[in-house]
Amino acid sequence: MTDKFNKKTVIECKSVYKIFGENAKKLLKSTQGPIDAKNFQAAGCIVGVNDASFKVYEGEILVVMGLSGSGKSTLLRCISRLSDITSGQVLIEDQDINTLNEKELIALRRSKMGMVFQSFALLPHKTVLENIAFPLQIKGMPLMQSIERAKEMIELVSLTGRENYFPRQLSGGQQQRVGIARSLAVEPDIWFLDEPFSALDPLIRTEMQDEFLRLQKILNKTIVFVTHDFEEALRLADRIAIMKDGIIEQIARPSEIILNPATAYVAKFTNNVPREKVLRCKDIMDPLPADAQELASDVIIVSSESILEEIAARVLKSDQPATVVDHNRTPVGQIHRDKIINIVFSKHDLEAKAIQTL
Image (cartoon, rainbow, N blue to C red):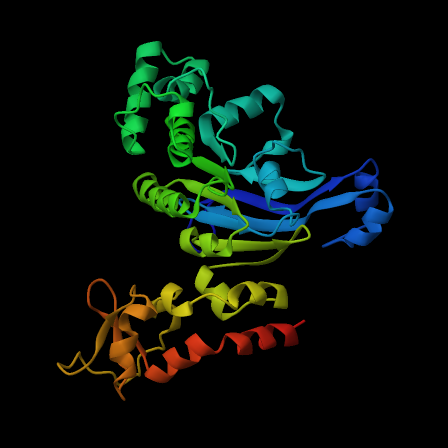
């Protein structure tokens, strides 16, 4: 299905609830919209996901971000049907996965889904090559074909030369690369990742984030990525869904979350974000005036994709607005120095604005 933005919808959740407890379905029957978790808790139930509705588009990285206990990993398990939902629908390419029997579900996972988790779950007695080839052989791929495919994946994740290493001989980052290669070997259209880098040292973690973005640029997968790290979410996401107590507080592009947090809870995450290092010119530019002329020689020109830090010094020195151009050098907007000053230093005002909307 293609939505109004002409993007193919790959995953859609419609009023998804996941409630743990014997009376969950009975209690839900008399409820519409987000439920009061305290009432359910009093009845012996725990609310994991509370009325989640959203879409994930083809080639998109949707990062589900939240603190411990927010419901982010539970939501991922519902989308992949590692856990059955209590109510609602999860559609994968318009197919309701909760109506599938076990055989159909296994076939869907094998043909469409790849999964990477925080624990590497490598087989300790198998080499890098064997670990990657193993799931292909389980699917019925001939031995030599699976080995060739595994070699391609090893090259893709930059582990050439370590084909015959065992997991104990690899660093944490290298082990996670093997896990990623093993997941990609089955050529999934949809990729689920649950805190894949959280156990890694900060430097290795940054390297793996770079590797992840490099792979996505090549492969263009549809991705749901779970993390508790807001900076990681900002770095990786096309859109971010921020969760609290099972509820999606806001789902939007990173720049929109920074500039227009929907709630005070969301605003707290944005307070310490160095906006000049995250926001791009296209995120804050104003429309061109109706009487805009062709580019003059003395006009400051900046790329729509440039981050503010890269262009701030030039723009702040001028009384005249800078002209923002796209990759074809076509003018698409303008930025005045006052706009940069207000954006970079107005974080507390935005939090106050979010509180007022409650």
